[in-house]
Length: 90
Image (tube, rainbow, N blue to C red; front, side):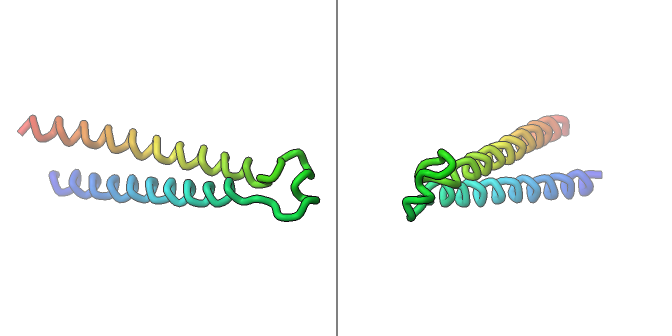
């Protein structure tokens, strides 16, 4: 029975690491989109977005990255709390 719980914890750890990796990737891509500036003057004033036309996309990626980080941290805290309770009940 302990092997099954250890395998489940290993799988949860891998899922948490995957979520954190995806969040970091989204933060990197959002930094690229946020720092992108339009070169031509026609693009600069069109649509009211100013010189950063991908700012909304960047902020959306930051939101998703933050949500993934939150989910991973909640999962980790629940798992570490369960591991602490299981080790005390020996």
